Length: 246
Ligand SMILES: Nc1ncnc2c1ncn2[C@@H]1O[C@H](COP(=O)(O)OP(=O)(O)OP(=O)(O)O)[C@@H](O)[C@H]1O
Ligand SMILES: [Mg+2]
Image (cartoon, rainbow, N blue to C red):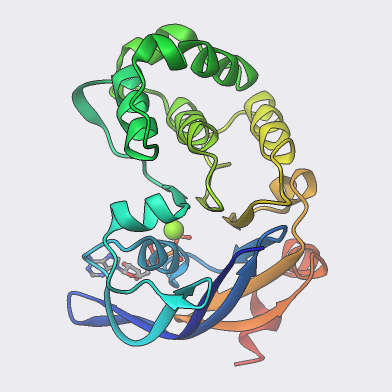
């Protein structure tokens, strides 16, 4: 069993404090729903856990299996088993999706593999995602539709098989069929070895991938935590009841 522990985390971006003391423990086997109104720090928390250099940690700590990872770079955290599916995936013109997947897989294993060695694995995983194989030959996310970019994030996740997946608004931009396919892929993961944080604004996604825990972030703090009943309450009542708890 593995753990990520976020302790009293304060994060600022360009001198502006965004996270103001976040405490959160995520263990293998758990799916944490992270909700909250726009611009209140959800993506910032995931970026800070992953180690994006723009997000400056001014106080607090992030522990992976009881050891601080604050000194580790993004690639070192990735090698430990952390993965972030970004809200706005980056485009990498000039690098084909297939080559990119090969680099990513090789960066995470001792044994260096050629593309032909991992091709059938890529093909199976892409097919499970209903992901057009021709997309794999194109540059990473270049000209991809919103939904295609989101599926591409999940394809990378499945190739890496991380210990912790941080998934930021994967459902935004997915059509109803794609939403079904992506949730099916997430539910098929081996959760005995993986912990997950899912940011989403909508209960329809959490009806498909059912969280074990739920938290609401407002103004850089977790205001309330509980189980999936929190998601239901936000769906029917909005955020006013959470704001009254502040
Ligand atoms: N480079 C930056 N400079 C200044 N402020 C920033 C910068 N990047 C992010 N912010 C601010 O940080 C705050 C938190 O942003 P964050 O992306 O974490 O919100 P969020 O909760 O993920 O929102 P959403 O639901 O819209 O995705 C926002 O007010 C945002 O404008
Ligand atoms: Mg966000």
